[in-house]
Length: 264
Image (cartoon, rainbow, N blue to C red; front, side, top):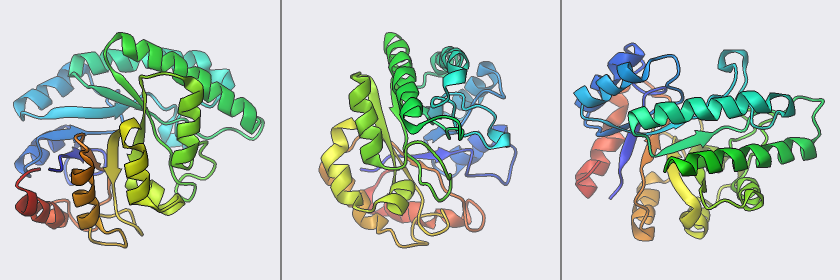
């Protein structure tokens, strides 16, 4: 049965971030995820999680200057030390918040970096992070993103991420499969999920076009949810979409899934 986590970066934006935990719990979620915990203290986040009986299932490694357009630094050779410091910081938060897995956004190489150099830097950084996280019992994930929303992003397809994972050579590196990103880049959602399920540790969703809630676009989510059940996927599905109206008005799809499957 599908297990859904509310992405608090994208959902419940009607209220300030620290109030979104309660909003998610009231809406029926038992798990949440978000991009970054770092603007807040671990104690403040842990208090919100505990008070609302929520499990935090995922957040990202530090990704550089997000407001300036950076989408990760793992591909940047001149920022390896910053990346490694960020791994340590992410581990501190993950241990305090009992997060089982962390995602790495590899970033956008600058024009002076060759594709080969960017890729080798990604491999080295992921190998370092996977080893450091494994010592703490935390999984490392890497996520390909579509080149329409994030032009120049270093990994655009699931095959590219899987090739990097093979070069890293760690049993502690997994694929974060974002259905929205991969629908835009490659399609073949059901076949890809089936073929690579053992290497997929987390799934995220949004419909296309618009990156809104399921049922607003072209993706047959009713089929995909049943398909994932048949495949035996037991992880969470992160709801990382932009509500077309208010968050609560857009949760009709989730109520329908809960009615059909008896679970969230």
